[in-house]
Image 1 (cartoon, rainbow, N blue to C red):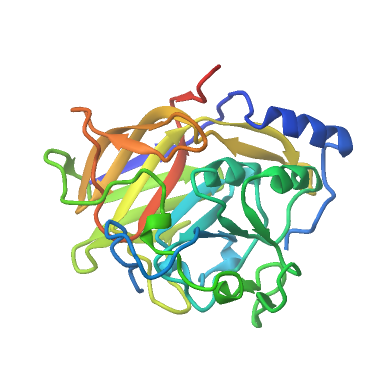
Image 2 (cartoon, rainbow, N blue to C red; image 1 turned 30 degrees about the horizontal axis):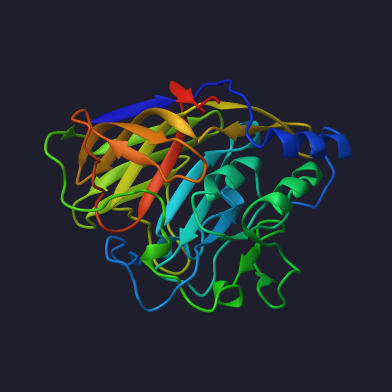
Length: 329
């Protein structure tokens, strides 16, 4: 059976207000700035002792010309967020495995900074950012790695037009995969909870993008379709995340715009609200809670117990919907 989720515009106050205010005073309100240019991961419930450090997060282009992606299947977590004009972008987080290449890489957004604060000084690979956002990136507790910062880490591929042809070599940014202990997301992995309901296909729609996740017993995961086309990769076949989370959040206008003047939406990932956890061909209604930006996100069922995810890759899709938003002082 198929369920569809349609997003809509929400409102909520901004975080990082003090830093943003200083940033706004330094620049205009639109345009400018740096130009935008298979294999399942190891079981994240088993911490690695072979390497230490923090995660690598890569901001990935999801325009039609950017597909198929490279290196996506090695990610432990893939976040899906809404950007300008109702389109989507991905942020892939790597801890257990570093693929040879990841991309195409695109620019960072304000939403990424709040989302990444759950990790201990993560490395963020991105292709640039709107000028007014740069002070926020500089102030964020992360290691920023745009092109040109580390020699040899990025390259331009062939066969695609710019800006959809920029790739990063993770080995150029990290000496080794940090291991599952770096995934301070609050997620719990284990056997499927009791209850739930049969749900073999779920669709989430943005104003100008659509994702469908279809349960595949043969892959023991969910096949992904983007804008009605089955997703694949250049290096490891179609993605098949073991768990898909539809997290209902408030999405509001930010103070940032792209070079065409389109507002950049901000996705509220701190607070609490509804969610739907998909695993093993079943759906589980959940409540998500992330009290502060430094916390991971807990997903609990109606009994108040944390819902275990299936070991393997997790996709978290931020869908507009009722949410309690950010906590107030």
